[in-house]
Amino acid sequence: MKVDWLIVGAGFTGATLAERIASQLNQKVLLVDRRDHVGGNAYDYYNEHGVLCHRYGPHIFHTNAKTVWDYLSQFTEWRPYYHHVLAHVDGRAVPVPFNLNTLYTLFPPRYAAKLEELLTGEYGFNVKVPILKMRESTNGDLAGLADYIYKNVFLHYTRKQWELDPDQLDPSVTGRVPVYISRDDRYFQDRYQAMPLLGYTEMFRRMLAHPNIRILLQTDYREVLDGVKFNRMIYTGPLDSYFDYLHGHLPYRSLRFEFQTRDTEWQQAVGTVNYPNEYDFTRITEQKHLTGQKLAKTTLVVEYPQIYRPGENEAYYPIPRPENRDHYAKYESEAAKLNGSVLFAGRLADYKYYNMDQACARALKLFATEVVRG
Ligand SMILES: Cc1cc2nc3c(=O)[nH]c(=O)nc-3n(C[C@H](O)[C@H](O)[C@H](O)COP(=O)(O)OP(=O)(O)OC[C@H]3O[C@@H](n4cnc5c(N)ncnc54)[C@H](O)[C@@H]3O)c2cc1C
Image (cartoon, rainbow, N blue to C red; front, side, top):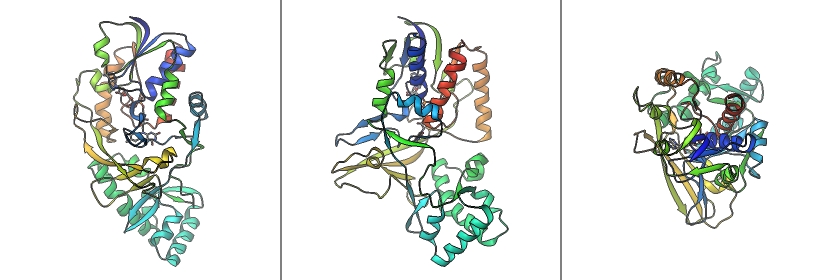
């Protein structure tokens, strides 16, 4: 077989590039994935009860990038969806990110009103203040509030998620946890928030339904290297694997997903409930909130953070620590030696946490810069 491009990985990154190359350049693509489906981690499927489930954890689409929104809208209609998250704190389910409504759920009304006045006085309204910044406040009540949030919402969740204390992680992780001085309970504030009406897999099916694209599933790209002639290659798998772990395995965090179907129409008030302080799992998501399906039964997915064991479970989250970035840099310099004959992109090849829209934006940019210009 002869193609113009061999693309490894049929997730957001690989599928976007395959679609662009096929439809805009009229070139032939062989898209290979070792899994038995397209869509990468965004893959969804109907379980035996007819509930649309996300196999690799709940995926909620949100973006501020009009280019990404317009691009994907060619392949799917959307169902508007605002994600809401509650966290179990001190025996109550409270809105997160922590906001003004959370104050009134947790504290007596007069003290909550005092904190609200202090917060708006010091920082203004409709702003996100990182808790680390708030901890530095000279006002005792505000510093105390920041401490409370840090201990009850952030600290134990972080320990469960990463098996590390916050100070062992990149400061940007802690730096991102905000108090949102607002009454907006939505988890995201992006301009576009919606779910693909018929699911992610159907969206990917439409993206890839082009005569110039051939898909090979359950195939490691190494298996086709001898039999396929191609001009160029795009690789969206793990960078360490590409170089046969020459510098050792890059560290990741993994997850175990437990799906539970209940004989009740609804189980939770909102899409996701976080359990920062109790149990071994971090959060439970009720799939139907995300997809809008109307069914008598409901399916929940419970997430248990795991140590990543190469070959046994999946590499989900790069661990954000400076030494891991240095480790990745060694692989980057191996990649540079290839002088652009292989293009590397995606959350695994870039060793970076990307949201779906970021992965798609990265692929569109790579197409415009490296692929079109050659
Ligand atoms: C638990 C979890 C929840 C998430 N929730 C959200 C969310 O709510 N919203 C959001 O925007 N983003 C979310 N994300 C991020 C989202 O999953 C990523 O943005 C997206 O998957 C990135 O796409 P990708 O194509 O770069 O990588 P992937 O989707 O991982 O695709 C890479 C593909 O390469 C294949 N591959 C690897 N090596 C080889 C090989 N040797 N041969 C052949 N194929 C190979 C893999 O099988 C895989 O299918 C979440 C991620 C996780 C882990």
